[in-house]
Length: 366
Image (cartoon, rainbow, N blue to C red; front, side, top):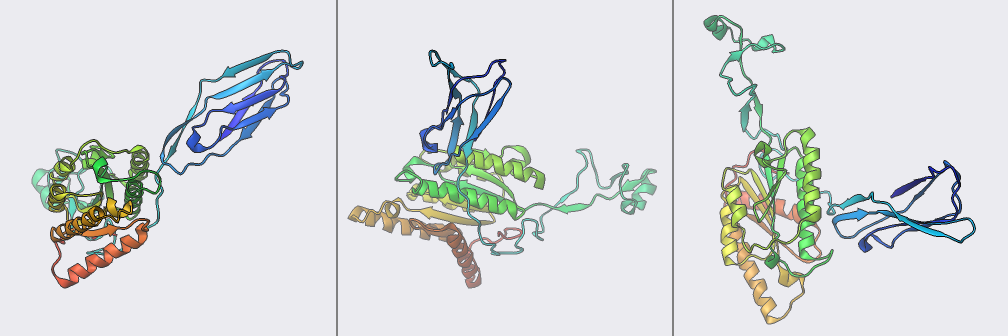
């Protein structure tokens, strides 16, 4: 953080003490002492902040304490301007995987769309300034008495939805090493990786909220828009908290509209009802990968109740796999790149065995 002080007075200042307001999670409040600033002079100071917790934090306003040269008078002033620091979740690079089809978001997924130039276009359409003359459709030109051109097809970007389960009942514990923070970091890493691989990506939470929004069916659009969309999704994850709802039904309703391509989910604890909802989600996707966090394992509960919960968690994983999910359990402190690689291996083994779920996802996932 850089601070610059300008003395706009015609007189030099006396002793100055500066103090900037900083939230305690970013460290102690920085203080600086300036001996004297001449008339029209300028001083610059800087300090560093760091945070192990994601979030949005205010920096400032700056407080200034001024003493006269003789030490007889002290004046304190606080400015109104402040800035905001956004600490996004930690992301880790993920290995490229090829689970089905091509390993690119564009690939040869065989999903193609017409290169529309307007809502009133028909096949073919009228010539427009700048069209390539090699696209002129001469038969239609003779029929309509004006130049007509063919509309070409262009590949659609493969789509990916990253689903984050934020239900409070699905996680136990708090802090930077908790299961929920692992899930948030995992979702951030997954969406950044998929955007880098050329996929159109959106972030979806269990309460049905989708980011970046309604444009392009809620998915990040062109390459230029992808960078802005990534920033928007990371900013959303920087402040995401637990939802009050207890179910995944609203997220399922969002996914029910159409085929979602690849679905990557980060689930907390799933009871029998929520496991059924998650199983139905898989039917709306060409491929599904689920990272499931068991609170009993993350809290180290070795009691009989904890062991019983671990047994139920194994049963939930089995049901997800039967529904077509590539379901991966997440032990405490696990590294996402290793689990990502494991998911790819499980998917490949399932397909080679011939007992996997639907594999119609265009372009694979990577």
